[in-house]
Length: 259
Image 1: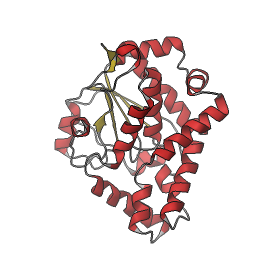
Image 2: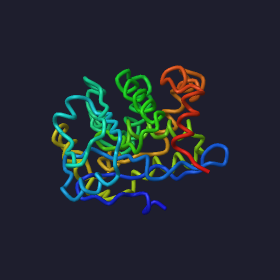
Image 3: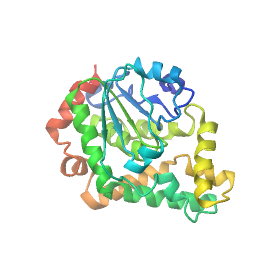
């Protein structure tokens, strides 16, 4: 099933369909509507032709202005979707790059990533994009793509919260989160991320780079715990902070699930 989810592209990493999971009330999340990926600066013409065929109505970009300027996304000739992004910075650096500061060991990298995930639900610009993400999906206007720089941290949190809102089992949501570690050309993605990290911080060993460019179940657990500590539950966070109340959840289920 993992292979079936991945959209094989040459220059865009971690591009995949995150639908298809069983959801609340015996339904299933639709396929062909929900896509996630890393940035598209290296997209080839062939990649763009494949992406155009998805007929994306919305592209939700969690990157900040400086990330978008440094890594501008290429668009296909037929692209006519709405790009939703924050007019400013959503993070000082991409989370995996921020986490690399001062990290010299594998375990240090894990601890740094846990700190990042603990703080993600408190980052106001990230939450602004998150609200636009849920609002766009609730309108049911067609296929969407959500991405950040590597397509794993800010994107991973957004997808996990949508899966929760749709009633996807926590184990399935975690499986989708962890697909980052094997989806597509993982070695090329690690190499590209390692080049960026080392250019900023100097020599970091390969095993530590691999941790920074991947995900771990403990990261999503930490994010959920931080939300529950601050808001009581994921449901309260969705409703009170992200505007995903009962009516919005019903709209999401109407447009994004079947069966």
